Image 1 (spheres, one colour):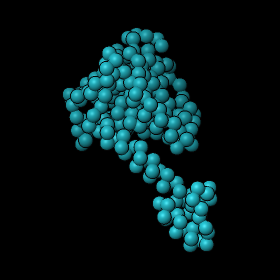
Image 2 (cartoon, rainbow, N blue to C red):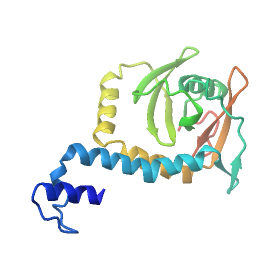
Image 3 (cartoon, rainbow, N blue to C red):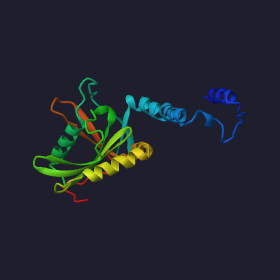
Image 4 (cartoon, one colour):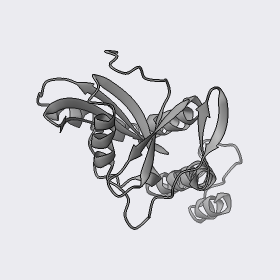
Amino acid sequence: MANHLIMLNAKNNQDPTPGSPMLGLSVGPTLLLPCTCTSLYSFIIYPVNKFWANKKYSVVKGNRTPDINPKVSSKHKPAASEVLTLHLRQRNLPHWTSYFVYYQDVWNDQFGLSYFNWKVDGKNYQILRTGCYPFIKYHCSSRAYSDLTAENNLYTLLKLLNLGIPTLAYGLGSWFLIKYSEDVVMPDGNIIKVYFMNKEIPDAMY
């Protein structure tokens, strides 16, 4: 990459100086942005994905131990929305719950939604959702239906303006803080694990 920038500067009759803040500016943002994204993927996202692809962890009683999960078929992953619904049912429609699910375990059918209503068996929930690699995070609160279009658009815009960097940091940091997990049994018998930072008390209001 450095040699490429030097060649471009030389072509424009510029004298690149190592360590100079002007080095490489002649290539313009159209090249710098893709290079930055490629570097982010190559040095952070790809190695993390490779590490977690075959080994997941949870913390049980203070000890970090590998989970042995039934592998989810890559041809038919359950929808994230289905996992959401079944998790709420398994919890007997709690007042609130907050969990993580791995991207690789579900079909992300709610992509682009940040704040929305979700009704399960006649009970309405307001859902705060964000993608925070390698997880999708859901925070569910039982509340009356209201129009969340403006809030959803605002939260989504903020994530776009931040290029997803804070959510990526949140996801990577959460991996070290997750302490508990639960099984969500799907209709076809597959098990999807959802993860929690804290043990949730049944019927708790907060």
